[in-house]
Image (tube, rainbow, N blue to C red; front, top):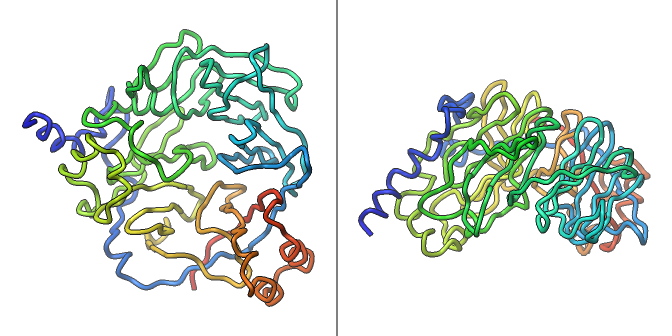
Length: 378
């Protein structure tokens, strides 16, 4: 027991140690979380536009687990229907990939997906430990045997993928790892936690890799850092200087016995997710007591912690789900349509007439609506 506590004490200090020191300790930005929480500020979404994903009987989306914007197209993964849907930039349906089965070109369980710049769709079947690569709008395909279990992946090139929570026999063998698809060799980037296992701690988000242009942002749970990953470099993007907001050894130790303790506490940051970056801002959601929307201005290093954004033209959730052409993307908050003030709110906005009409006529069974916007403070 004493040895276990000692290990917990050094866990946070050693978490970022990794093979060959690939992740640097120096942060590109340092953030004072406590100062931002105690300050009042106003920041607004601007240049707001709505993308209504086409709804048809054969393309009903249960939920958006992940999406990518590639070449003015939207690729959406829905684990409920075990399918990937492709829409154009206006929301018009183009095609879908839904090939359940055990035969060639088929998968049993869609765990994760990725889309490269050539619009090749990579689908990971966790049941058979293979990646299916669909080309030419899903007409052609080939298969890659990965011989590994993991929770999420991105492709760095045709031969190398990055994955998180590489695991075997129910235990994580690497928090982050690269897999060479030519020989199935693994290279550990972040070592697994020795005190408790990530697989036993519930997440607030459906995924943990957040793509912004050519790099991905990732938060190693219960640390005070956000890291940036691409095929050539792994570095610390943000470091929070207020370590009191992040777990101490006793809390970390409690996760050894019960991973649900991550949910039932209000002392520390429970999670950071939905992390996206454009030329001027980094946005992310943070759980501290409740969900907050955090906005960091890279130009003047101002940091805002908000309960939500207010705008007469913004009817979205306070969660970022993607980035397109430098614009942040969120989902329409369809709970609003049940409010008695809903129609008045829409009509009193300055949105385009066609957008107003579509919002007023929106029904809960319709496919999701994406909202694109920029950020401004005034």
